Image 1: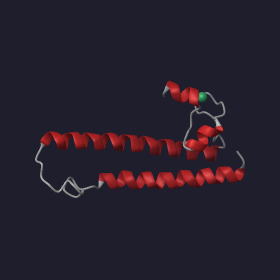
Image 2: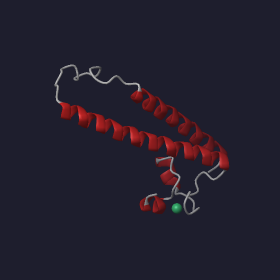
Image 3: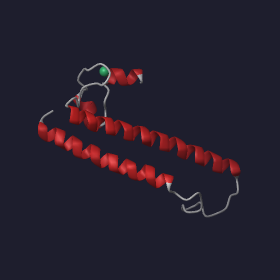
Image 4: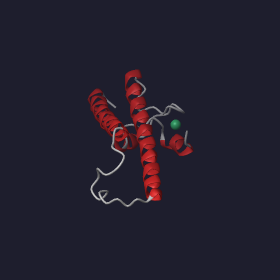
Length: 114
Ligand SMILES: [Zn+2]
C-alpha cells in the first residue's frame, strides 16, 4: 500500500472509531425505557425487558470489540506494520483490507480465532 492509500485508510479508521465511540457512549447514557418508537406501550413483561437488556449488552460488547480492533489497526499504521498479520506477520490480503480496513489478522489466523 502506498502513502495516499494509507492516509485514506487512516481517515476511514478514525471516522469509524468516532462513530463507534458515539454509539458506545450513547448506549451507556440511553434511558432505561419508553423513549423508542413502539416502546411507548407498557408491556410490563419482565422477560421481554430482560432479553432486550441482554441483547443490548451483547451489542455493546461487540461494539467494544470492533472499537478495539480499529484502535489496534490505527496503532499498526503508526508502527508501520499496517497490512501485516498480528499473529503470523504475513501480509494480509489487500481485498480483505479493502473490505475491512480494521483487519489486523490474515484470513488464516482470523479463522483460528484469537
Ligand atoms: Zn496470520
